[in-house]
Length: 408
Image (cartoon, rainbow, N blue to C red; front, side):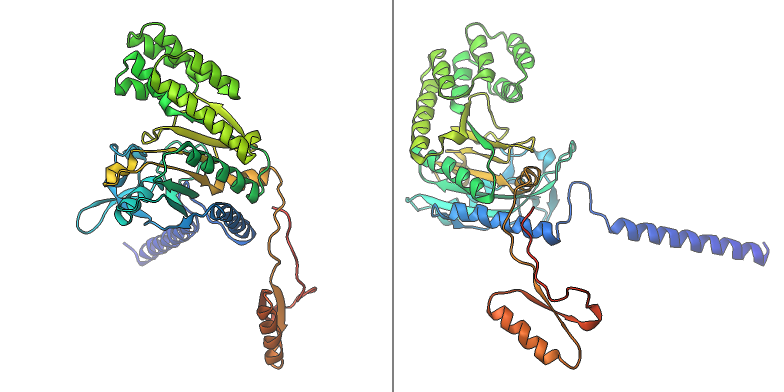
């Protein structure tokens, strides 16, 4: 092999190595699928909205709590009734324990309450905020990491507690700048009563729940026929998907059932509606008995909030009276979570205007007048005005001016 051929191969290898390094450098600039960077003005807006949402919750006397970003796998197991295992981000610690990034806050809060407040008999009110992680394969534009913010009321089984939670959601959304939204309320006990009345087993109930929640009437009908469910039970179960609207829908739902479990759910929703009238928020509420959650730990009232510009619910919540038993504390509970990223998308599409803080005052200095300019910056900061010191080389027309952003 001649020296020229060796050199040619060496040059090719070097160029290939350079191209590979360049490719890797460019690849490292991007985030994995389903996550994104947030910075600058967008992040300022998000912080503002988060602050307003939390402010609305704190007005009801809820105290902040923080739980770990990852927990033992069993906290989110199938028995708990939370996110399916295949949608969890799982990994191992050095002891070989299976850990998961939290996909949902509620089981974490339940575990924490059972551990630190096992003997507490007075109602507990917790609020929280953080990121959750769901490893979904069918994204459809959804993020795998989202910011969630919410509250849990533990130790109060009353319908008055349900009303407080619904009102708090509405007040928080209004405070954050949303105007056009609706909270749809259902009760899983109504559906469970019908399933019990029809003699359905657990697997059939879960499958039927999926069809009804997705408003898949034909899928539900085919399933009931396959399982040999007789009339009038088949007809009653199929009607659940169409039971939504105002108070009249509740009256109609109560007229077609005979079992005590479903009737008790209707009476509780009627009482809840009355209480929401006292709060003055009934205009934001509707009822939907066909709304069923994928989370199996819900035991009574469930609800979702929808708004213009976002296809999915921006708030999800409900009552889970038996979840804390899984962690050793027998206490009823009710709560909700707000998907902050969805709220931001809704505010943007609704062209909401947010009163954001003023931009920082820019003060330019040279080596000769640094002390003087530093004194100016310090004075502004003591007065509560943001100020940034910049070298004179970066000066531009209009330097030192303060601007304010009002739009989102």
